[in-house]
Amino acid sequence: MIRFKNLVKRFGERTVLRGISLDVRQGEILFILGTSGTGKSVLLKNIVGLLRPDEGEIWIDGQEVSKLTEEQYLPIRKKCGMVFQHPALFDSLTIHENVAFGLRRHFQFSEGEIGAKVKKALALVHLQGIESKRPGQISYGMQKRVSLARTVALEPEILLFDEPTTGLDPITTNAVNQLIQDLSHTLKTTSLVVSHDMQCALSIADRIVVLDQGSIVALGTPTEIKNSPVPLVKDFMAEVHS
Ligand SMILES: Nc1ncnc2c1ncn2[C@@H]1O[C@H](COP(=O)(O)OP(=O)(O)O)[C@@H](O)[C@H]1O
Ligand SMILES: [Mg+2]
Image (cartoon, rainbow, N blue to C red):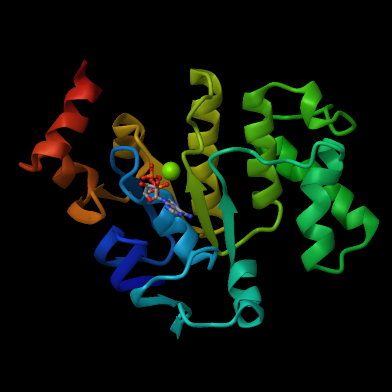
């Protein structure tokens, strides 16, 4: 479980997260919705320790992590797989090597095991036969799927997705959404998905949290969110019907 207790994050004078308190339940798919610049990516980065909160606490599996040293944070990072908004693959490495990178770095697998894991992860995102290509030779959508495969290959307990389907075509978007659901069911992964796609959130989320200017303005099941009286939530809902 992940628990945020009154999390505050500032950049200089600017307060970006204004006291976030939230429990993410084991195995659930929680969607985080909000307009751009509202602190969604900052929230995810606080979980993996890329950013540290100014106030408040973050508990992961019973451990308060926000004040851990970089070294103490390593096992937490191993638990959390983050898929960044932009793919950020290594241009000079092949797709195979990109997906194998974390497996080599964090575990002691044989070459055979790594090969099998890379293949399986690429198959999960419907990419096959591109292992020897380099990122520059494939489309942006494919690069995004490779970055998903790279994280999924590590089989983390917690998966953090930052806008996994932004910039993807509808067919790939469906495949990625399906993948998030499959992983959650087969690996019992706890998933946090930053998105601005209410339609998708309504169809695959267990719960949805809506952020506005660094505060939680709505939290509930898809049905509860559908009936929310909060103006921003209604704006998101209006887009679903149009
Ligand atoms: N490392 C940083 N330094 C300074 N400001 C930042 C940093 N990261 C994010 N911000 C600011 O915090 C706000 C929220 O950013 P972000 O979480 O990326 O928004 P979004 O909800 O679109 O993901 C933005 O105004 C952004 O400019
Ligand atoms: Mg963002």
